[in-house]
Image (cartoon, rainbow, N blue to C red; front, side):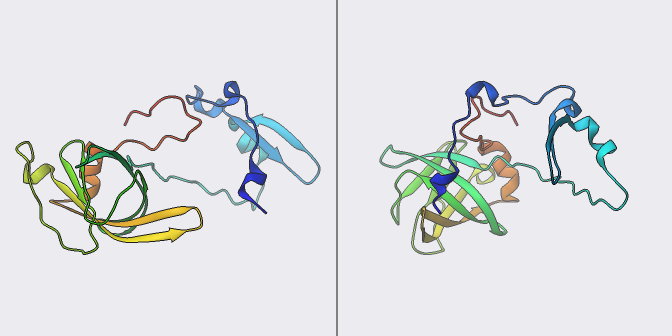
Length: 181
């Protein structure tokens, strides 16, 4: 089985770009053993029976996409994929990076790509200790689809707080506008 076995064409006009209002008027596909029925989300209470289990997803999307510029002037994009521990993330990187390369992120966020864990913070004239975040690539992982990088971020305070200022919402490729945070 190949990933391409799941490719299909979906017309752009069939892809929702904004949530429907009111929200409970969104479409709901109901499957049972014999049929498929299209309803509205507001119909859900009438579909539930005694003993049914309803699981709620209250997860939140974080502004996990960070854009930067390397010392060479090349553009780089880092997408936080999974939090491994405090200030340490598994990431996808768009752009070429080599051990020892420096990446400057917007809002004075700096990431240094090195083979070692420790690195020094080099503040520029516009940086302050409060708005400087430094990242070090700890490990490059070769996967069947490309590389993933484990990056340790160094900053004053919670990294997630800084991420609210420097990150962008990861928008799926079928969305045609950015998401405001």
